[in-house]
Image (cartoon, rainbow, N blue to C red):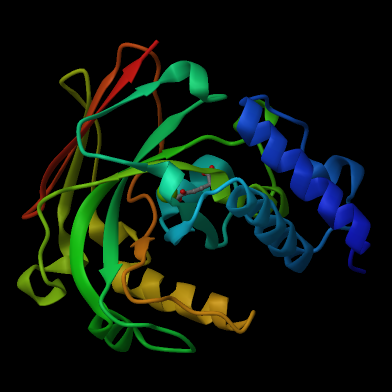
Length: 262
Ligand code: OOG
Ligand code: MG
């Protein structure tokens, strides 16, 4: 049974405030075990509405838990999506402050920039035909739950841990690369911490995009031209702290860097 409207509003405020104050809270399902996945996506949208009311605007979407490594790391085995706003957008080479986060982690990702709207149940090929360009991306995730632990329903309510992302400045058309198998190497302070391939993302990042389109369709929504889509981490996420210099190199898509300050 779905939660009452008033409770959904209250819980949207709880996750939004936790994000705003970088103060982890206990999982929402601890008090509301009857919460459904649909409730969680409603809470996610209502928490976004609070951000929009503060002046943030939607710039795209992300998929999460699309690789085996991520699913195993988090113990959650279903792909999910979240919303990305302009306030989460960082430039390549950006400096972030560790103090602005609860417990930040970085992920190596592939990003799409949509050239056309995309909606409905589509196959990966059709999904890719709506893409203008592809680039590498570093995503910073930061769960608003204590100890970075959650259930599927809790992480969905928390906008799939979305916090920040930096897109690479080297871009390519989807057919200019072997998008289904790009090597990805993530380093922290010059040491390689994770290596992987874009093949880890649902076997091909275009499948993640198609899955997103289908999931949004369940709510009568879709993607718009110009929006960014993060396809999901290709490897486990890596904890970062003040002083860390993070770099991702993606075959054919150059390097992206982030520095974590105090
Ligand atoms: C959920 C978000 C996962 C990804 O790329 O798999 C995600 C989390 O692990 O906190 O962004
Ligand atoms: Mg991610």
